[in-house]
Image (cartoon, rainbow over all chains, first blue to last red; front, side, top):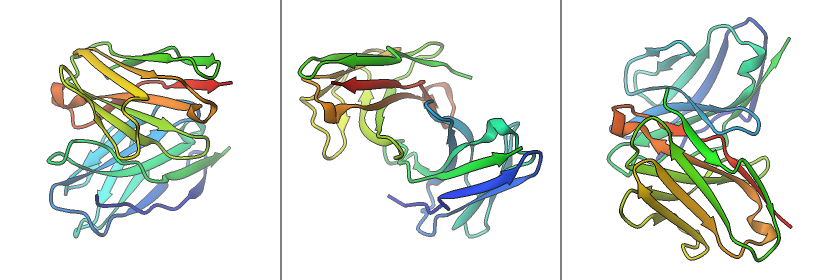
Length: 111
Length: 117
C-alpha cells in the first residue's frame, strides 16, 4: 500500500487558517487522497477527498501538488471544535476500497 | 450525511465471556462494511472487511475464530468477540462503504468501547 507521512502534531490559533501537510511520494495513478478526522472518543469523520484537482467543500479545501506526491488540507478558520486527529489516507478503489490509517496529525487549537 | 450506529456504545465484561457488537447503516444499504479497532493513543487498525451474504475477509494477524463477523443483511453487520480477555479491551469502530450510494467515502459509527476485566 502506498503510505502517507504527516507531522505528529500541529498547533493553531482560533479563527486562523490551518494548513495540514501530507506526503505521499509513492502514490499510484489510481489512488484517491482522502482526509478524515477523529475527535476524542468518536469514530472518524470524512472531511474531503480528491484525485488530481484541488477540491473545496463546506468543511475544508484540499490542495494537491501537480505531481500528486503531496497534498495539504486547509481549514480556513480554525475553531475549537476542529481540534482532532487528522488522517491523510490513500484509497485505491481497485484494491478493496479499504482505508489504511497512519498516525495522523493531532491538531490543537488555542483560543 | 449517512448515519451509522453501533450498539452498545460501551461494554464491560468478565474474562472468558463473549460480546456482540452491532453496526447498523441507518439510511442506506451497505454491501460492504469494515471493522476497525483502536488501542489508546494509537491509530485505527483494520480488522476485517465484511461483505453482505459472504464470509468476511480478515487482515493478517486477526483471528477469524475469535472475532466472528456476520453481515446478514444490507444494513447490519455484527462483530462477536469470543472468549474475551483483557488484551481484547479496545475501541471497536465499524464503517459502511458509501460506494453503494455513489459516495467515495466511508461512514463511521461512533465506536464501542470494550473493557474486559
